[in-house]
Image (cartoon, rainbow over the protein chains, first blue to last red):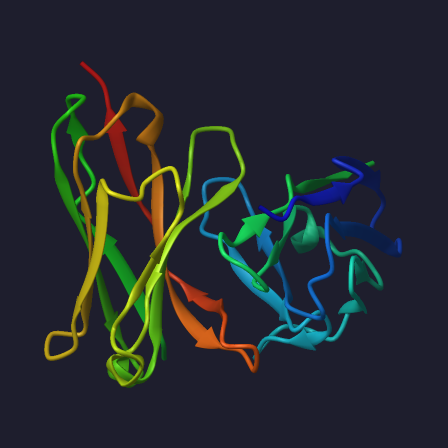
Amino acid sequence: DIQMTQSPSSLSASVGDRVTITCRASQGISNYLAWFQQKPGKAPKSLIYAASSLQSGVPSKFSGSGSGTDFTLTISSLQPEDFATYYCQQYNTYPLTFGGGTKVEIK
Amino acid sequence: EVHLVESGGDLVQPGRSLRLSCTASGFTFSDYAISWFRQAPGKGLEWVGFIRRKAYGATTEYAASVKGRFTISRDDSKTIAYLQTNSLKTEDTAVYYCSRGVRSSGGYYYPDYWGQGTLVTVSS
C-alpha cells in the first residue's frame, strides 16, 4: 500500500497567515492526489484534485502543487472559516489511502 | 444541486449485518461511480470501496479490511447505492460516508461531493 505522510500533524496560525501543509507519498503517484477539508462533526469537503485543480466553488485562496511524491496545500490568507483538519489522499493505486491529517488551529 | 444522503446506520452486535444506503439527487447517477469511506471516532479517513458506473461493468474494489465482508451495489433506477456490511466487528464502528466518484485520466476515482454520513456502532 502507498503510505501518505502529512506534516505537520497540527499547526497554530493567525487570521491572515499564509499556511502550507505538506503531503509525501511513499512512492510516485504522478498527480493523482486530492485534498479535503473537514470541520468537527461535519463531512469532508473536497478542495483539490489532480494535485492542483480546484473543485467547483472552492475559493482561490486554496492552491495545490506537486507531482510524484511531494505535494503541498497552501492557504494564502487564513480566515476564521478555514480552521479545520485537512487530509490528502492518493488515487493512483488501490487501496486508496489518506494522510493522517493536519489540524489547523487558531493561534 | 448535487446531494447525497446516507442512511441505515445503527447500533448492532458483533457478527451481525447492516445495509447502508446512499441516496443521490441533482445529477445523472448512472454517469458516476460511488465511493464509500469511513471514519472511526477521533480517527482519520479510511477508504472502504467503490462501485464503477455500469458503462464500466459496475465492478467494485474494496479495502483489504472489509473485502469478503462488505459488498457495494447500485440501483441506477432508484439513484441509490448500497453498502452491505456483514460479520461486523467492533473495529467497524465509524461514521460511513458515500461520495460521488469522478474518473481520472488514469482510470482511478476521486471524490467530489460527499454525503453527511451515517453512524454505525458495533457493540455487544
